[in-house]
Image 1 (cartoon, rainbow, N blue to C red):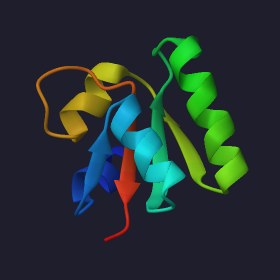
Image 2 (image 1 turned 30 degrees about the horizontal axis):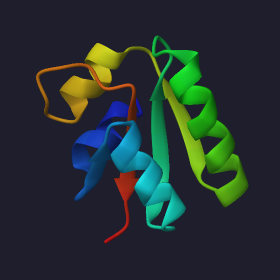
Image 3 (image 1 turned 30 degrees about the vertical axis):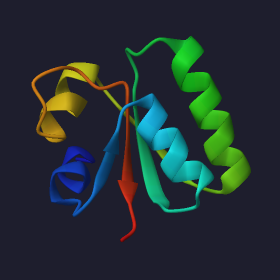
Length: 83
């Protein structure tokens, strides 16, 4: 399951703004997108990832993604960052 990658990541950028910065600066290794997140938010991120050549992995829910990131609230997007 892809949540393991999130849990094991040394560094994460959680949330749209943080993940966007990570992708734009070329340090994002992989971006996780919750399927139940608002498409107006996630579509921009997915196209940015395609443009930048970053792998996008879809996960079932914002709640589970947030939990995998170790936060109490749901997360629409999280990026695994290369150190």
